[in-house]
Image (spheres, rainbow, N blue to C red):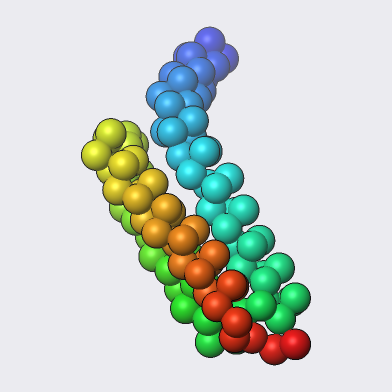
Length: 104
């Protein structure tokens, strides 16, 4: 009984590993972008409205990642789409934190 349980656990861990490795890079990038948003808001480079807009964009990326990972595999096309969304979000963070608006 123990060997069946250990075998089943090993199988589950082995099958879920590739999904985690594919999304780890995008999750780390998303965390850095969220940090940039909060840091810019604290430093007064973003208005609260701009920070809300950027946070909503990050939330949309979260949902896209969840949709892509539902089937247990993230295809190359899904990964590219998520990376494009993150590229766009990164540009928006830079533009909005350097546009001269904010609270000083």
